[in-house]
Length: 451
Image 1 (cartoon, rainbow, N blue to C red):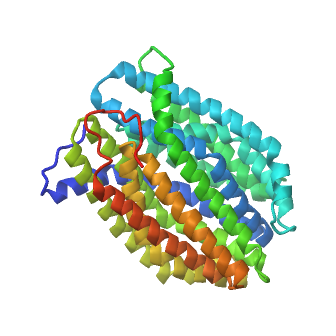
Image 2: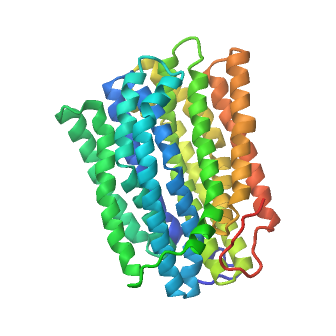
Image 3: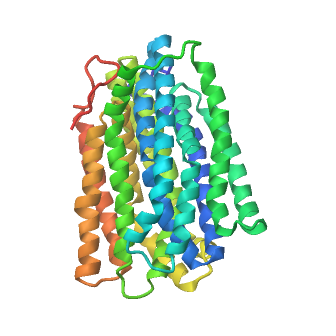
């Protein structure tokens, strides 16, 4: 159960938010270290492989959206059932979520493996990059089931106040993944394929570790509840849509950049490095986002509506402060970081420029993302979907296309388009949260999400 806080006790709100956020921050750090290692190794293998990895990882993020969406629904339902004291319903929710996640993982993994070559042939990406993309996609697809289960079980553990257990699992996964990247790539015939295989291997181990912990939470009766799955789906599908649209938008940005008249591969490699570096800044934002979902969900399960609102708001402002500080550190060290991620002078130059521009919008990104976590914890995922997807597909992409393809501006115009969409997204999510219309009256497990 969460500690109760008085309305004027800022220290209590901050401590409660940080109690959940710091383990999530470390988990996100582990994931970012893996991503940065991937980029570092790919960069040492060549700009073509680094650009290919950047494209593939965006595709990979698209095919895990179902796992992320199921996890959002799972967190919203399980976090409220956990504080309600209904153990039978809780166990049914856990088993149902795990079974559905496993089935979805198998289906999508098979589809990704089979259809990857046809997809790559259809897309307008540089011809020298294409030979590296299909093997990477197929290997990532081979480990998709285990990655699905890791994502879902991590959500279950943090919903049931076992976030530190999840943290220990991800520490093991991180060390194993990074070690295997260097082993597979530089000491076996696998070469660049080892980047993807290391992720699949580490996910396999993480899956079984987390499942052993989740089993301890469940009763001996394993029952599948279609009713609970429907609740999770109603909450989760908008997040699947928003993540799909977000990652598809990233792919479209790659295609827009492919229309540049010169240095296309170098700028694609710079975007890959920049996005991975920016993911480090996202760490506390998404950690506080996930913490906010659990905090708001737990408090709504106890029918503490006003405290849920105040806690969500306080968590957001703490996260903004952390993100602003980290963004400043990255700007100060931009050139050193870019040189570490690539030894190509053009890639380094473009990466530094990306960093200088993108860091401006990071505090705004954090505020919107963390408040969106509170909305998701309340089941108000449809409103988050509309606002996030709208900022990408009605602001970012049309503006980038117009500036690059129609007016002929360079890559800098794309980076500013991304910034402007972040400002709009922040404003929309902040206004939605401040309205308070997303707060449920009595129902502890929201069946519908608001618009």
